[in-house]
Image (cartoon, rainbow, N blue to C red):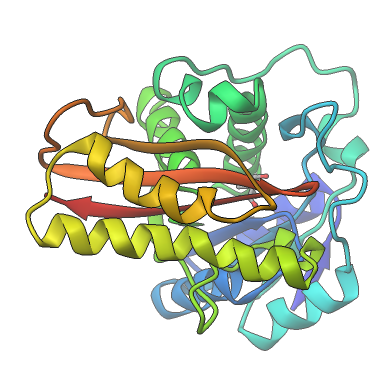
Length: 279
Ligand code: PAF
C-alpha cells in the first residue's frame, strides 16, 4: 500500500493505476462500517484508493473538528489489512491552500434535516468530495447509508454537475446490540451508550409497525419519539419520516420508499441513524 500526501503524487499513481478505480473517502477513525466499504471496493475494483482527511469545512464553529478522533497509524494499518492499494492523506493546506474562492453550494435536499441543523455542512461535504473526485477521478465511489442524507446529497451534485463517477451506497453496519457504528461512538460513556440504543430500537419498532400495516406518518414518528424521549440523557434534534427521494416530510399516510431518520445528542455527542422502508 502506498501513502501519498500531495495531489501531484496521487495523480501520478492514479495515472498508472489499473482501471476500474474505486474510491473510499473517509475522515479516518475507521471502524467496520468504513472497512465494509473498502472490502466492497476491493471486490468490485482493480485499484482501491482510500482517503483520510478530516475536512474542516464541513464542521460548524461549535462542532467537534478539533477533538474529532485521529489515529493515522491505526487507520493506515486497517486500510492496508483490508486491501487498499493507495491512501491519500493530504494536509489541510494541500487541500485548501492558496485562499480558495470556490465552493459547491446546494439547495433543496441539502437544506432539510442535517442541513437545517448544521448550516453549511453539506456545502463543506460537497466541496471536499468534488475535490476528491477531481483529484482521484475514480470510476466508483463508496459511501455508507448510515449518512442517508449525505448519500442523497452526493448523488444529487454528481448528477447536477455531470461528474463521471458511479456512487455506490453500502448498508449501515451495526454492533450486535443494534448501535450503528460511528467514529463518534468513542465519545459515549456507558450511560450514554446504553441510552443510545433507543435509536435503533425506535427504528425497529416503526419498521415492525409499518410491516403490520400502520401508515400514518405521525403514529410512526411517535413510536420512535417515545423510545428516545424515555431516555433521560437524550436531547432530540429531529425525528423525520420523509420521502426517500426528496426528503420532504410526510403528513398523513406514507407511500412508496420512505426514510425514517433522526439526530439525537447525548451530552456533547450527536448521533444519527436511519432506515429506508417501503410502505
Ligand atoms: O462521511 C464522511 O466521513 C465525510 O463526510 C466524507 C464523505 C469523507 C467527506 O469528508
